Image 1 (cartoon, rainbow, N blue to C red):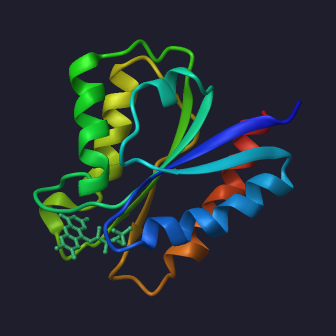
Image 2 (cartoon, rainbow, N blue to C red):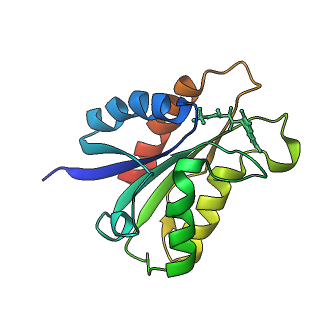
Length: 152
Ligand SMILES: Cc1cc2nc3c(=O)[nH]c(=O)nc-3n(C[C@H](O)[C@H](O)[C@H](O)COP(=O)(O)O)c2cc1C
């Protein structure tokens, strides 16, 4: 059976979804079954029922996760599920003009999942909307490296 990766999207203006749509074929090509889910309406079960997830989220407000990810994030923070069976990666989207909160959305998920016992695979990707690099291209390049680490 193919191994599965669930990509969880936190977004307001859709960039994270565009990135996930381009990252998906890279993971499929490497032999993974990939499902992309909007974080809106998700419960902790998605992290208990899956062994490998890819958080793909932007940052808003005071370094917050996007609106569609807020309930999910807060539920995890309150319920404190044991995620020791979970491995995860993080693609974070931000903008360095928000210097104090740059890419905090992805960083907050990383910190919380680690506190709940999950194991991060690879480095957190941090895309800067003020750079010349397209987020989809950055995501694809990062994913190509990520699957190599996953395969080890
Ligand atoms: C109103 C607003 C607030 C933002 N706040 C932050 C922030 O605090 N930190 C950060 O790194 N990026 C911030 N950003 C940048 C977004 O995270 C970035 O543009 C991202 O690529 C958007 O992704 P999305 O389309 O998936 O939501 C903000 C953007 C907007 C429009």
